[in-house]
Image (cartoon, rainbow, N blue to C red):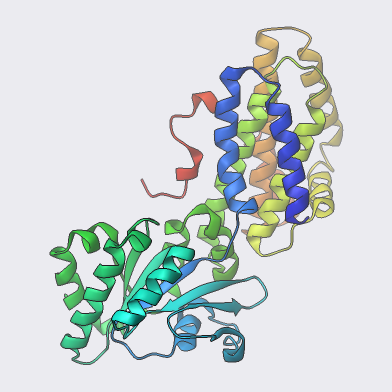
Length: 373
């Protein structure tokens, strides 16, 4: 399933939502927004490298992003100094890196132009391992200049300090001392991490939704994948619960089925597979192998209840939301956690008992699901 198919589905859904009461349209559309950001607006994450460490750019990318994969090809990526470089990592995606180390005033102007065209998601600061205080201070000043300019701070970019060796992890760094005295650095700094793949989980939770899917497909961190899958499942379940609660007998069944298939194919994509409506259909069919008749009867009962206004609509919404949530949870444990189909069926049966609130009942946007409490 490519983006044009997904766009067509979203347009149909938005057309259906437009026929619903005004009181429910806005909450449903708010749940649809993170899904559009994750899949329709998906793009490679954009990182800026700054600091006094001389590590080659491709080696830096390989240390963090390409563990267990062949190193990226230099002729494919390095196209110019102080410009965005596209680096392909394996078969699942790419990142964009801008090497801002050692930039003079003319180069800083070029970097600002690049950032105004495509804003940075995050800055990496990597200081030299040996004593290089003068060079490090200059690089810190350059970073502050970029953060306080419209092109840097306007994107909401964050900063991560990377430590070239683990022995320095517990030592107070010159960068941390500077951050304590700089409002721009202090507001943007996420923390300090060792230079290596462990930082990828943090990246997945700090990036904007548009870049998160590409990041987890590259990074392979299971916990990060589950966080995004949870966002997808909760948003889709809330939308289905709201649609299912509307007094439109039978008319919403194709919409609900399509949403469930899109949700499962999205979870497949997050796991590193390709999106496929056919494979999603087969998975849902396999889930219902032992409960197929029950699913048919439940859908028939749900549609019949719509002929009884009031409480019947509420029950319908609960059934639609709970069924969607159960399918999503089963897909997550199967495609991301690597569970067996039997375990996925067990998860489906256990999860369908969960009550899914309507969007209007949500106390906070689901796009914050990846944030830590």
